[in-house]
Length: 174
Image (tube, rainbow, N blue to C red; front, side, top):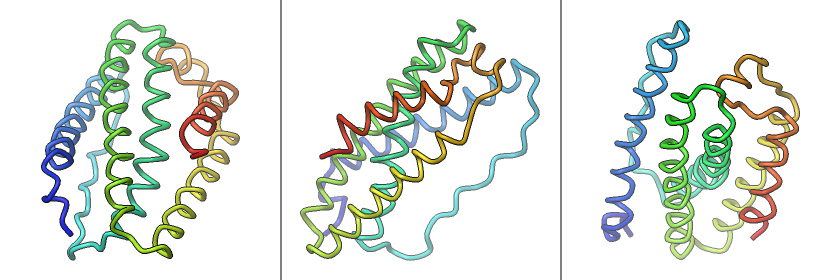
């Protein structure tokens, strides 16, 4: 079993990686626009071993099916709510990309699920459920600075909760 056996998923993953590079450049531009200082980005640590299908499925469930999916919805919100036109345009592009990335995550989840045994599938579902609970907790405990909410369209805790409930009802309930 190898993801290379699915050229469509591989091509979409490679495109998503290129998108993320563009997003980083966009955020760097945004930081410079507002005079924010930033630390040098940390390098992504690549695993030094071939991960099992279950390890990939667990990571995909948390990062892709939960965080990426919610991030796509938030970026769409910011594309509409940001007071700064340049920020709205940046987030409109990011929202479109992140929506494709979330769709990729769900397609990868489906592809992997067929390759996991019953116990592994249960562990993946449990990890996704924990990630959803963790996200709900993070949303309850955060309120963006008013200036960022206005300029960048960051959702308030109440607005983020509504976005979360949309994901919960339409995607995560399955």
